[in-house]
Image (tube, rainbow, N blue to C red):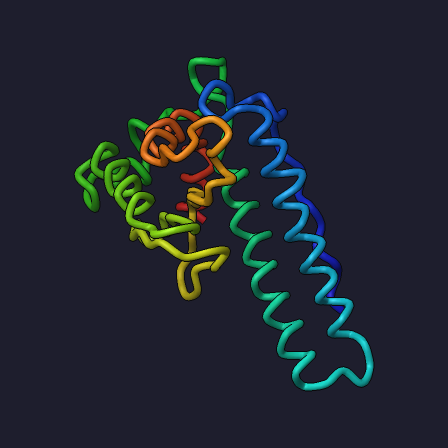
Length: 195
């Protein structure tokens, strides 16, 4: 039997991403939205273990499991890729000035500003709810809902669901996408890039 999914621990307090992402948003996003994905994934796991489930029930439970595991994985990546901003005593927003990620981004995107603009463009082009991902090969993709990229290795995920920004930015996704770069933990992103 598969181990149940667990809500990962945040490596910072709810208010650590202020002023760019407010404490209430982080709290609701993590403790409510993300926890719900964990709970629903576990509910589907339990359902799939029951004897005598019908093929239709197995299909629905498998879909529920896939959707919610996607929510767990995307949110774990998102929250792990964030940290306190440089302005508040952290390292968020500090892109490396040398090393493998710096060099690769310079080749692929012409430098950090090119990468940043491409990620923002991806986030703005995602119609409705979803994600923009930077992958280990430095390609950028978007995905609807909680779809985890298949066949790729994401090293950064930016949530563009409204629940990620609405309390602070309302319908201004562009402002959220401009400000999230102040709290991206590029050290963490680089560690995934090198792994």
